[in-house]
Length: 147
Image (tube, rainbow, N blue to C red; front, side):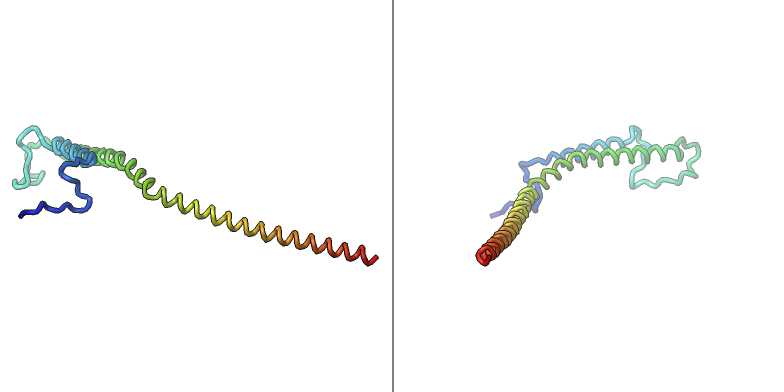
């Protein structure tokens, strides 16, 4: 009997689709399409391309390389912005879901501890005040009796 392959932790099921992965795939596909040149004069990795100095009459120069680098940088910046825009709400939700209950319990415990501490301190102050008041009253009563 052949068992199905086990999924790795975090790996989506075949019937599930992750919108973030779909967006990244679309961005990469768009990037690949932008990098493809319409003509066949673009070298591939298996071709040997001579250095720029030995290519007489070539219209491409350092300006074209700068433009290509700028367009790649713009693409990278755009991809980062879109991915982060998609991730930021997910991160906020994750923190709210994960830390929200923990923080609420910690705040509740801190408030309970503060309430208990204040209650005990107020009891101590009231006991001391009543004891002092009774002591003064007894002392005043003894002074009245001795006169």
